[in-house]
Image (cartoon, rainbow, N blue to C red; front, side, top):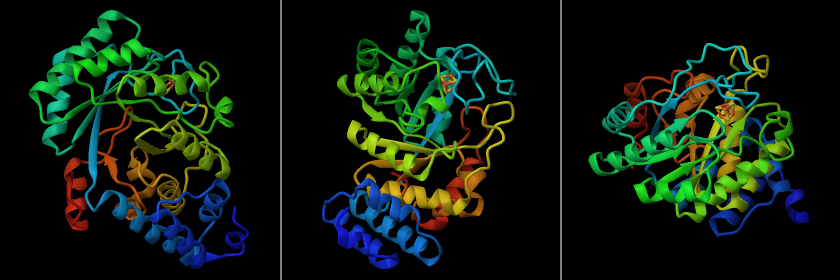
Length: 334
Ligand code: SF4
């Protein structure tokens, strides 16, 4: 960190780092940490500066995406946050892969709600069965040809060959979260290596898929580990970063964690915007539950999109309420 930066405080710090980012420069982890620690009026200066960066790099409009939980529950992995792990006693539904018609009809409803992207998400470490993978490929082809929405997939860890098959079927992007910082990951998952996740991200990118990868914040990681995740994503060259805020689910290992406060969530979005100025940042799980009345500020804190409709195992708010929110904010949908 530049010594002159470490002597700065509040608005002066925010303005100096904002101008550097607007001029095409980067901030480092220590500088990001200073921003993440801001509170009071300084926090709102941070948010306003993140909004300037968002508009400079992405314009005023935002994107919406929706997902279908195409295969739910009974997962052998032990991700601490997840209601779908077979090691957790939760109310999450368990069912096998939906058929092609079931997936396409969910995509149609998501397109009609105004979203531009539709993710086919399945539980489990991989989607190994060829029959299941073929169902996803056929669904992707139909969504691509029949509907005005881009098909995405999130099928766990995939090989390069699977990524290529998805790309050839018309899949626009692959979603695979790193979940958290490398240094905190052993606290979250013991059945899969961090590098398995990194390999999947690289396989998708090598096959020419746009890569959407982020994580879940508020799982007990330190502020420094929140920054560490953003820097890892930046170095991996992903193009979209979904930010999820942990909603502790009864029956999971993290059920007793205190959720992040709304202003903490906004600070994280803003600092991610400083660290990742050119990347799309979507706010997904936790937007309505954790941010409550402050959710309308996610775009002004630097997000360029959000997920609408239901999440994987929990209900989101109504699409009508989200459309009204965007109308009131006078924000256009891409
Ligand atoms: S996050 Fe995915 S891999 Fe981990 S337990 Fe849940 S469904 Fe399984």
